[in-house]
Image 1: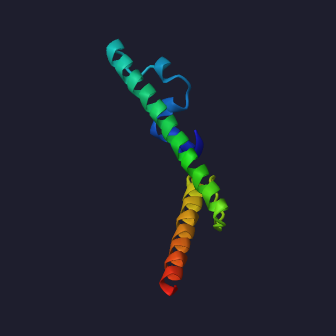
Image 2: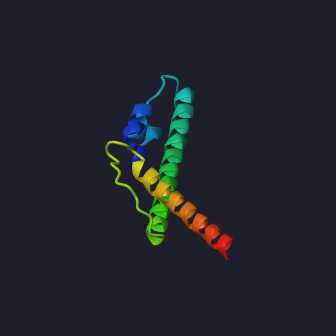
Length: 109
């Protein structure tokens, strides 16, 4: 489940237990089907959001490396999402430095 894996089972155990459509949520069949469909859709949305976070994180890390930004160390185990925050934060700071340097260079010419 990626960066947010420690939280997925706390939110909904069925997200970790395989196929949410096969789980039993309610005694009433119609209610069970509706809840199962909702949980399945939620699980897919969760998966897609984790994919998007991963892509954004890799993009930040790649651009930060290309621009020579110093990315601080992070510990995903202790702080999920910390590597994304670190690489995107370092990238933003490096872009700010480059823009400031460019502005200063123009002001002196």
